[in-house]
Image (cartoon, rainbow, N blue to C red):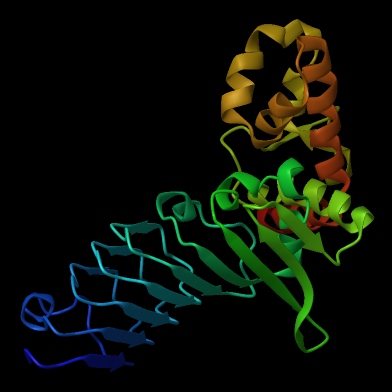
Length: 277
């Protein structure tokens, strides 16, 4: 074990890495974890310089790998924490279902990021400094992001260099504008505490409902504005748009109304109506 330089764990039933492995494998340089479904964390491999984690559905944390230089993450949807990687040089991430850039990127500083994601997310990244994903990526020296379309893995791209600044994409401006609107409401799949529907009129049908939070956006409820900004997804988005209370009321109403009219909003209402019957 002291001479082991490369280790591959594949499709085993481990829930945690044996506690003595990281301590005794002091010459370990490359570690590959493939399809270990119940593994939740990977920590304290102080000699590893290259780590691959592929399709580990329960993996949430990778930490304390002080010599790690290259990390490849493929389809680890529960990943929440990356930390303790001061030497990280290159990070590759592959998940074509990825809809938002993970916040854990703020806790690491790779020089190069290679990202394969959904076209929806790539289009949001293409918005650059005006988009919702910029703060998670702007500290990285070089970003290459791609989305698949029609079987072509790199049909759409965003290329970014921090210094000297360079930003390039082949996604159209109209597509970027629409994606930024769509992405604001992606989080609404996880409904906020007041994001429900309010019956309009006596014996109202499903077609005569409106978002509950929209009922509180008139001037009579203006004192609720700070609470709505914290509690409601639509209202928190409006807070970033409007500077005055009058503008906020108008913007919040527009955002909630727009979402309510989208195809997703209609499907959501149909599903909820069916579940009540």
